[in-house]
Image (cartoon, rainbow, N blue to C red):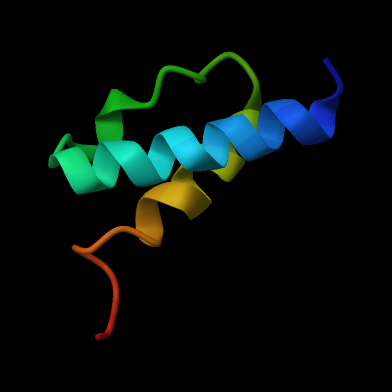
Length: 52
């Protein structure tokens, strides 16, 4: 699996975590800063941070 696929999955996992109400510290991808960033981008798209 390439980085793009990993990043997409990390972003989707972050969004799912936000929707489930888990804290931002629940990121399971702390060993790779690029995947952590993708996870956080997904997390911030969740309902807690959306403007609508």
